Image (cartoon, rainbow, N blue to C red; front, side, top):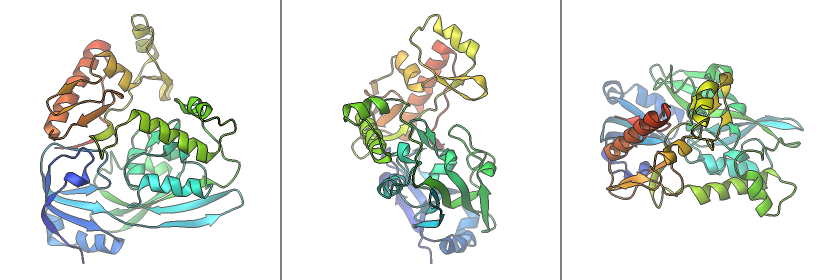
Length: 341
């Protein structure tokens, strides 16, 4: 039997730490509980929001509807060979704890995604990625429940329509499915290690590691992230606020003429990806504080709540930042964070 709470305080359930409330709130521990909820009168009449770890969300105000907190648990080896295995993981598992579990078992493939906040269920929605790795390269299938009928559907990797921080669950099927589990393909030996992105190679060298393992790569990524990104338990934030934009080669070459140090990475469709953090920093926002919110002094891509800020404050700051980047570089910034109006 699902328990319904009213006027639920969500401050501890969003990593910005905003003082917001949900009109109604419930926690789902099993697929059976979700089926029961879907057929309830409350569910049918209220607006609904699926909430995972609250690490990629911006509440602009109180939520006038039903918040459904994900808490499905379980990690199961579905099948394995001498070289690889299929691992099914419930959506309520903590992502970083899953990564550590895999690393400790010497299962390779997601070690570069260490210390990403949030729950497993958000991984396919966002197509989470970091340091040269995206989860789309490891997902075999996604199990999801239709929020209208309660029926379960299995999505293949192709059916998920993964893109850069995108998926079918964030676009065409947004708010139509509840992700109950994902199945990953991981390696047991002959791991393909990725040390070429960002500061991983330099960090491994500083750790005096000449022959890296998935464990040492995970350790290096954790060290890098901890040195650059604020702990949301200390300073409220949702990690990277904007996506890294992709622009045409011609646009990039034109910018190079007046911005000779502009960094770039290869992107799809013969475009060039430019770090949003660099663009924001060039516009003078890094470390800037406006009342109770601001831009982190070590990473311009992270917007922060210094204690008494509101979602509207961060949203207004984000709009100003995007406007200045558009004016200076003619580049549109798109939020990576989900904004709840």
